[in-house]
Image (cartoon, rainbow, N blue to C red; front, side):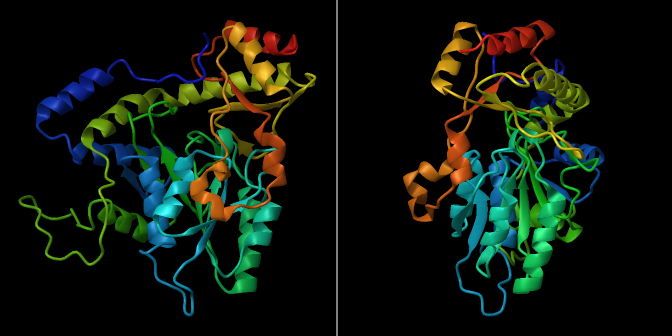
Length: 378
């Protein structure tokens, strides 16, 4: 079976982790600082803080900018809403609920599987605290268009909602030649087990300012500022409560081991995706997603829209090819029943989406077999 996902682990990772286990320091320490330094080099920004998972990163970003940890605007009601997509992992949206905020669903653009920016523009109101966008499969949202929408909202309402980019799929993606996290928003990357860059589990939050990044480093450790002289870390004061969201040296060491090879893995994803773009164009019953200039996807997933999805899935399984919808639309769960909204774009794609193997483990022969199987029909 050609797998849909596979863990990428450097050969020297076990040895490097063994050294950390034997060192007597396995919590947040020098390896976390080293990993953050390497991430600053790779992402092209110094304003970041690692966390124990991307879900914690999203929770922290929302807490700081839209939830209890933010300064309220004059005359603002105690509750607020967050505009977000239902086409994502629940890890994107449950932190909204955990921060006591309401979800307001934004429809999906069937051409990209990202948020429909026209619908997003219509739904910004004075109650909007934040906007969460997901770069599905690594394909970047049109951030220039999003910026113009925010400009108009600021002119109309007198405030600018914060944007949080969920980059869980998007390590290696670029917009206008720059890595995501460099466009004035908060960006959260995932280093979960099957991501292109894994730390076993973990994530990093990229901020637009150093002030936010430094505050995040304090809040990820209960609200205690760890930047104190060596010796007992006794907090003189904790002015703002925080969380246990920090990364540890074990996870950071796994990340350091995997960093040197991640670019080659992403490049192979992109190469395989480009092959599918050529080989699957015009296949009856199958629709490809958009490829626009200036938006380079990491191609962590390769998602297509198919007619008769159960038959497609059965045919692929017969040929030893793993496929999956990957994520269930989040608006079907009873926990968010009160947020129900009409989402015709999502309705159009939800029952037709399926992802095929595209990763670094897919050989030339594998992808030829996959493409030929699809071209032969189902």
